[in-house]
Amino acid sequence: MNALKAMIRRELQEHKWGFVYLPWIVAAFMSLVVVMVYLGLTEVNTENFKFSTDVFSDTKVVQQMNEATFDQRRAAIRAGLLVLGIPLVIALGFAVLAYSLSTFFDERKDKSIIFWRSFPISDSFTVFSKLLVALVIAPLLVIPALIFLHLVTVTAGSIYFAVSDIVPFTWVWQAYPWLDWIRIIFSLWMQGLWTLPIITWIMLAGAYSRKPVVAAILPPVVIVLVEGVSLSSSVFFDSLVERVQPWSRAGSFPKEYDSPLGVAELSDIPLLFGTTEFWAGILISFVFIYLIIYFRSKSDYATVE
Amino acid sequence: MEQNTVIKARNIEKKYAGNSALASFNLDVHSGQIMGLIGPNGAGKSTFLQAVLGLVDTTGELEVLGLSPNKSRHELLKRVCSITDVAIMPRWMKVGQVLKYVEGVHPRFDLSKARKILSNTNIKRNSKVRTLSRGMIVQLHLAIIMAIDAELLVLDEPTLGLDLSYRKEFYSQLIEDYFDGNKTIIISTHQVEEIEGVLSDVVFMDQGKEVMSGSIDELNQKFLELRPKAENIEKAKALNPLYIRTELGRPVYLYENVEADRLEDFGEVHPPAIADLFLAVMKKNKEGEDK
Image (cartoon, rainbow over all chains, first blue to last red):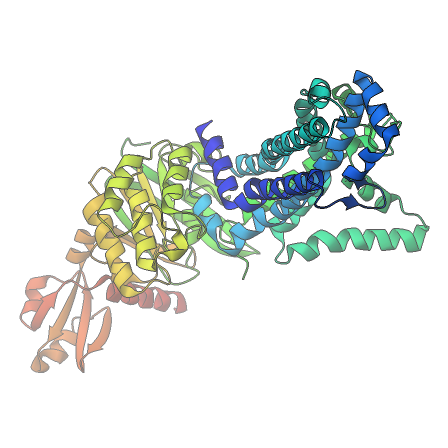
């Protein structure tokens, strides 16, 4: 247990910008935007999403808010928080991507693998600890920043609604889905498992290649091109796209949601375990993990010049 | 296995792409020895030490501290400390982070001892490794080694690429502060001069085989160097020296199994330097192969 703690601590120390600071930087920026919107200093206006206080000047909207049931309020709050969380999840995705690419490459490049391998830690355990960081710890570290962002947003909104006589201060807090934090973390962990074939593929490129970016990108591109030219199909490309989508939005997922902002519930997770695609991904990932362990065990004196 | 035998190697073989890195290699290392594996590049020194650490598969019988390195590598590394390059450490880490990491992963590491050793240096716990000089990195590495209660220390060309002053400092500190007679050290190097005064035993290796081995005391009895006076050069030659070299224009003869009493009449007699003995043995070995 001490060893695992030490190894996780080491990973977080090395990748503190991606895993520790980045979520807070994004959350702080998003919080600032939210507060500025409620102060009337700015507004967010995109093709799919509008966030502005102008909407509350419409008496119909205010009336709808006052008449909203608990479930309607909760659904609206959830949708808002989901949209707010997207930049954080994207940042997490990039942090895990960068980590996967560099974690086995950098130790060969700076030769520190010689130092790490001089201690009584097996290659399998090292690979396990790095996967644990990417799949379990990194999503956990996003949660405090997400909670901060949620609370700033809900507090700012509550104050604005109360001061502007739209709805009472408690309107939001009564319907705030407190248990969503648990749902979010489980959802992120499931996303890690769903995307595991891509994560382990990228890690593998870093474990054996001198040019990991090329080794990670080139083979899939070649497969996509060969399949497209020879079979006129795009099965491989489509499955890649599926893997980077939210797991609950994958084509193979048996449930469909009413709206694009409908959130996957904890009870939806077993549905994912029931799909062949999920287990096929896990199986492929195990092959990649085996190869990562193999290459790391053979690279005791190898370096990247 | 004898109680004090730390490494027992019998008929160890290893081939890379058909070429023998180790060929019927045998070695016994006992507790308290400082064993030097000496040989040119490609002699098989590193391959053998990698086998000792369970990093490469070999055929033959190999036991380290009573364990099979391949089957029990994890268990073995709890009792063995190994360094391949003392100048390599993760550059992004702070000194304090390195120590905490080692404390977490090595059950025999004494953090307070390492901190005490470092308190006698200019190395600050908050300093990043990348800001340390090479000499300081060597000191940090030494502090870690000295704080690990290992039964066997494996050093594979540990000072390769370091300046002479750092190399000397590394070995002198290693012997003064680390070695206590209960520990065992095995060192591979092809820079013989730097470890000459450190070793208790040597094995000369070439092409994966042992060319000669013995304790320094035995070798000092068996081999002698003679700087003959000018008038005795012909008489010295007549005693069939194993190897002849020149030093400041004067010939120096190396003899095997010739009594010191016989040589002392011809000039100044002393035990040979390991480097000179190595060259002599290698030359003799090559001549034997040519015949």
